[in-house]
Amino acid sequence: MALRATIFKLELHVADMVRGYYDSHSLTLARHPSETEERMMLRVLAFALYATEGLAFTRGLSTTDEPSLWEKDLTGTILNWIELGHPDERRILQASGKSERVVVFCYGGHASQVWWQGVQSALARVQNLSILSVSPAQVQALAQLTKRNMILHVTIEEGTALVSSTDDSVPVEIAVWR
Image (cartoon, rainbow, N blue to C red):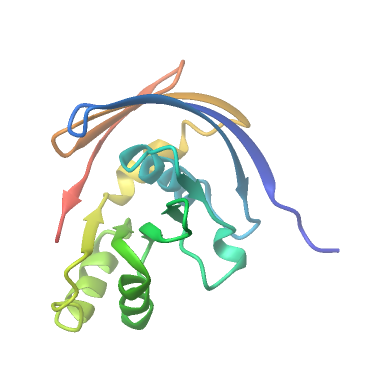
């Protein structure tokens, strides 16, 4: 029998001082059996950093033709394509052709640096690409906030996101590599 996704309910309050975005989102997250809590919480952080009315979680790990998150306009044009981890350079090149902006969140520490060094020259011509990195220790601290029903407040200021729950808070520094 196949394992089923675990469902999480999230009330997310975003205060983004950089973009001037202040809103609340009621979200349902499905965590694939092979997805870790760390990766799921990084998806939540990515959502908070790029939150808009049109941003949505995709089918994620269960499909290869969609990113972790995307934002589409009313015509179906992809505005934001957000990946997690270390996607292959062909995938990034395809995404850059399909969307207005591509963002890759790395969270593997030294492995992320090695990945970026390996693909950096091949992606040099991609104009709509951003590469962000979060340390593995901070992602693990985020995972400690995981509950089946969560209320999280995310305050974003100049390269830092403060993620707070009713029990704890985790400051997350976001390094911009490109």
